[in-house]
Length: 63
Image (cartoon, rainbow, N blue to C red; front, top):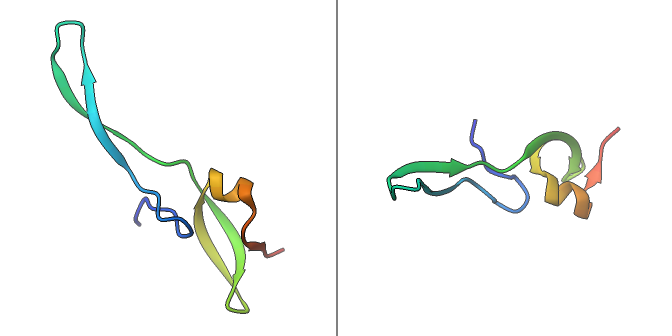
């Protein structure tokens, strides 16, 4: 299961943790994905959406 938003395509970001001694270790930030039931193409589907897309409300929720 991929960690990518189905609506906007937001995925993980990669960077470094930098210590006081300037040691660098790899780090990743994952999007806050939630499973939501939506209507798409006239069908009820489960989608993994980031919270930003859920707040925007640019989809139709299925009850």
